[in-house]
Length: 133
Image (cartoon, rainbow, N blue to C red; front, side, top):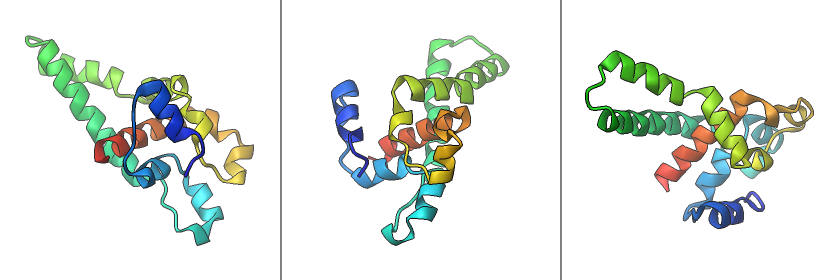
C-alpha cells in the first residue's frame, strides 16, 4: 500500500477506493517492480491503457453533448487539445500525484517524477483504476 495516498484521495477529493490493489498498481512504475521481484507487484501500463480510453470516451461524450452543432473535425481537434500529455501532467501535478509514485532507484535519481510523460501516464492509470473500482 502506498502510504498516505488513500487518505489524500479521501480527504482532498472524496474518493474512497474499495480495491487498494488497483490504486497501488496505478502508482507503481515498472522500475520499482523490477527492483522488488519478490513482492509480486504490477505496474501501471495496462491500467493506464484503460484510463486513456476512459478519458477519450468521457471527453468525447462531454464535447458531443456540449457542442451539439460542432462538426466532427472540430470536435476531434478540441478533444485532442484536452486529452493530451500537457493537460494530464498538469492535473497530476495539481493533485500531488507525483508525491506518491513508486519508482526504482535509477528513475528516482533521474528525477522521473517531474517528467511530464510519467505524470500523464500516472494520471491515466489513476483514471483507469477509478473506473475499475
